[in-house]
Each structure stands twice: as structure tokens, then as C-alpha cells.
Length: 224
Image (tube, rainbow, N blue to C red):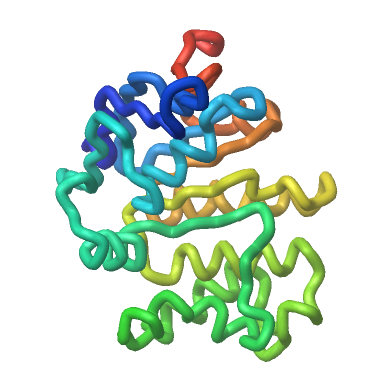
């Protein structure tokens, strides 16, 4: 079943001589529960694409639909609700709140949305992430790998339809990188959440169900 549809999406920054086309007529679909990797050189448009899939940015032209809802038709208020409830974002630099402990950081999207956490799911998620003994630690008391696990928990706590990860292993050593990818793959399998990962690491990309290769803002057939 199709969860995501990207149709003729372009993104242009600047005007005239300063115009930069970050994305150029990109189209693809992603099925529910699919794990897709997006790879390509720096400046190819990968992060721009991810931000638009998550409703953080909007296309200059084209359409993005998630579960049949057109993001371009939403005002900022509806987009904000969409981001909180339907999208889990995982960044390279964790973006944890330093004064909140592990449990509070994981539950933050629910608290911002005025929802009560599902205690059974929270317990299951924390155990899966290996954070049961760290719930009341601050981010400064955690290793890089543990902080990234917290950011994954925060992304998954709302049962989002779409999980987007932007270079999630970029700041980690090889062992922690392997652990994080294993966790993302497990959540993709266990919770049937659609996963899109941006990465420079082709060994990670090759573990996905499908690879999209971006170059100069366009999808190419390099991996076909």
C-alpha cells in the first residue's frame, strides 16, 4: 500500500544569477513499511528532500502526499500537527534538550501535543533501545550512541507513519553505527513504520529494501 507519493517536486533557492535548483522534478513512491535509502554526493539535494518529506520545508513546485494528504494544502498550523503526529525525525546531531532526562526527551513530542504516553509502549521502546537503566540521565551523561538511541525513541514514540533519518550514524564509530542501523531496521520490521534514511555510507544503503540515488537534484539510475 502506497504511503508516500512525491510527484514532480522541484525546489529553487534564490533568484536570477543566484538561483540554485536544489531539487529538479523528482518523482517516486514509497510503500507502507518500506525501508528506503537516499544516497548521493554532498549538495545533491538529499537533506532538502528529507525536510520537504517531513513538512519542514515546502516545494517550489510539485506535490508531496503522505497517506493521501497533500502537504502543500496544509497551513502552518496543520503542518505543525502533521510533523508532531505523523513524522519521526532523526538527525545526525541528536538535537536532545540538555535539561531534560532520557525519559522526558523521548516523551517530548507527546507532551508538546498534549497527549499521555502509552506506558506499555514506552517501556517496550526503552527496553528495545537498551535505555532502561538510563531513563533519568541527562544527555550530557550519555555516550554519542546512547544519545542517538534517545533521538530514535523520540522519533518513534508517537507511532509515526513516516520515520526520516538524516545521516543518523554520521557522528558515531563503526560499532555504534552498526547498532543504530540494526535498531532502525528492527523498528521498521517490528512496528511496520516506513523508514527513509539519508546516508553517505553505501554499506548502510545496501541493507535497505530500495536505494534512491540523487545527483544534482535529480534521481538517477545508478543503482538500478
